[in-house]
Image (cartoon, rainbow, N blue to C red; front, side):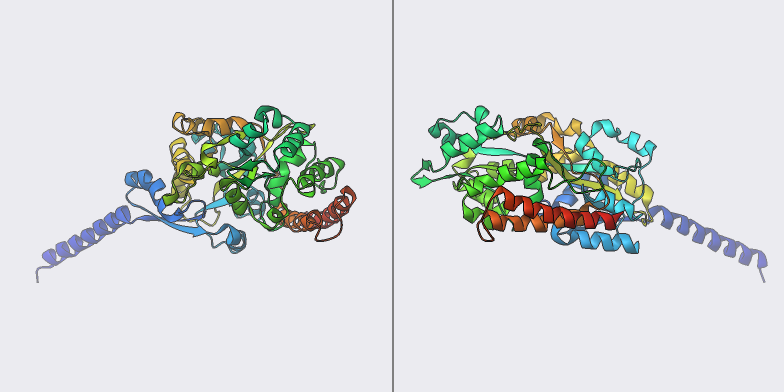
Length: 445
């Protein structure tokens, strides 16, 4: 028997198996699971396009994208956080980061990693504040895109009524006077209401009120973040002023039964001279009807953008949006970080802004010359420099639900469906809201 030959063949087989194993390890694709929300019309395809340059440079990486609906995302994300069975990378609404991080479900982003993407100084300050709880210095996410609000108004209607937009939007008094003068103007044989905003059937109820409350010097929480401030004198003043437009007929009662999307449609088709909304309106007004846009509408050729009217304490606007985080349960944290840092890079945020019409969260991206050249984009960005975010607390999710429900129901008073509208009736509704909110805050501590 040729034992020497047998031994050599055995060694050869072992070497071949070892080399195949090494080759297999080198060629096995790393796999990442990513959860994002539905922000564009074709989110799955847009994410694929957004990641194309990165995946071209990383051919061994496989990325599975799951698109969640905003309406059900919170329950799915909290379930994943509780079970530890979530994706590698996760999109979180900016008001959600503190809550999910408090569940010990997010991987902290180290100082070194923060420095790799430029650190806090390259992101919009109001949005960077959402990447951690107010009482926790650790960073758990990076800002991906921003949602800011401003006023959109019909230039032709203002001109016909003899109203100067700059003066109209300068403060609360001039704004009310302008709306009174504009209300009922006839355009193309159709009467137009001065202002459109939704009531209780809209999930944006809190977003719609926030700038008015802040500009009156109010807030949603006390300075120590322990109690509700929704019934403070400042908040009451703001909400009474805001609801007075509907009580006085400057906002039609029919609007209070609608949501934000329907109010925006009303602006496009000439029902309202003014609405307050986000940058996505710019994209809709720039797209032809064949692509789902409003470029052919009268509003598209006759609109301007202004900041919120200044209250006694300023003219801030709401900044919200989404952040990206890595779940602590991820088995591929290194690969997840590399992809997350790409998605929050200047180039990727610019690309995603063009897809979604949301604002980039990076300062070097929001000021990109290509974006600035788009119609009204620079004008819009100029109006939202004083953006502000909600208090970053772990209990904001359930707290916002309380505000949404109770303040939404308050619009029944405004509409005259439930009792008679008065500042005192609004105050009573806000007192009830504050009491329920304080119970939630007590439970969250």
